[in-house]
Length: 484
Ligand SMILES: Cc1cc2nc3c(=O)[nH]c(=O)nc-3n(C[C@H](O)[C@H](O)[C@H](O)COP(=O)(O)OP(=O)(O)OC[C@H]3O[C@@H](n4cnc5c(N)ncnc54)[C@H](O)[C@@H]3O)c2cc1C
Image (cartoon, rainbow, N blue to C red; front, side):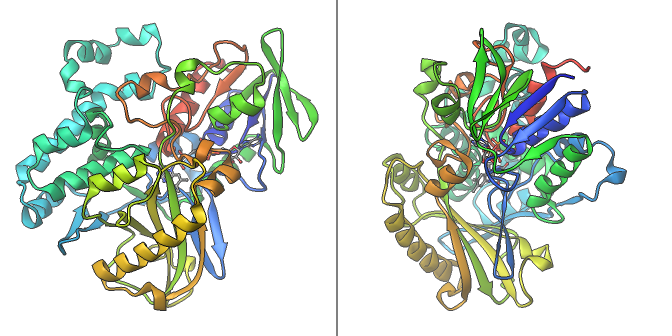
């Protein structure tokens, strides 16, 4: 039987294990932690449950594909009617309804842009996604054969349609006149850890996923995705070995022959690496050089998250909430300089609004996040204290809730902890940044060019970070394997 060693039980590693077990391979997943999921993890704290990492679930069909038969699965999710509630510093509160016409009405009602501007924007976002997704997301890239598809031909004939020569912010300024609408759509750059003032306009395809296809919520919270995929994998015979740190990929005559786990050798025909690509080349693939082009890439942004158990229920907030910064550009400038703005955009995610058991009666579980730069040795204790004060003051100012009196328990996640817990280089959330137009071409491919039998999956390789793209990377790796 052909055997596969997978290094890491992140979402990409689990998805690949499911796909290859279905093809008849015997798959072992070695995970250094005592739990699966990597960044898609949960935290239980004094009667509260928090989704520790990802909060937004898009393209659920990619999870459905892995589950296969729905009849044996308890995993369910629903489409959110209200995607996000936005709070602007001038007091405007805008509900981003899932139904595009209703959302366009809300923008026309509350902001100084027209219903038709939003319609046109979302249509172009859809066209851009449809034009690019097959080439950039669902195919191994770059590969010559991919350039001969209909999409690629369309791209070649219409290079302007790619919007790659303008920044996201510039594109958004062409569509809208109200700085608040522009800020709302600029924010989508952060969905892959980028800066809208640097990232190419091509990323204006991201709102299509949320506004045209939909934002979803797993009925048990985000961690239900990990739970369910591990269940499916186990049912297919995948073996998970926890507290199993892989020290090295064993290579002989240019081909993988297995891995070394906690100092002991494990033979296997193939190796799937689901750890961060920089960390993998630094510690697992000794003597195998990382391509110069990739070594020069910058990591994506990271995050600082406070998990607050909060007294009371607060109807002014929904599941996903954004409290915008007054000067969005200066927030990104502060991050470029390795710091944090004193008026950061604050994201609040409250699963107990949908999953009652996530907080005791009369309380809520607040996941409060700001974007921060990757870890380059900053004093995170000091930055965290500053950010906590700024967040609490901002929540009081913008939504009238005094957290100082209401927090009953708390914990945090910062870039250092993200790096320690998941091996993510500098604590980046989404692998390399997409702050230049060549980023899509610079990601590490899913199959090693130098070592036979070695494959790469997850957010730090092609096609990029975020749950849907990690699942797409698993699909690409799967495409290299024949059923046995
Ligand atoms: C705070 C936060 C918010 C996010 N928000 C969203 C969101 O809303 N929506 C979204 O789609 N995405 C979001 N993301 C990004 C998303 O979580 C990631 O892109 C995705 O989960 C990464 O999965 P992965 O397969 O790359 O593996 P990872 O999650 O990076 O896991 C890698 C695994 O490998 C293990 N490992 C590392 N080294 C070794 C070793 N030597 N031996 C054994 N095991 C090892 C690690 O312990 C870890 O379990 C967010 C991430 C974070 C942290």
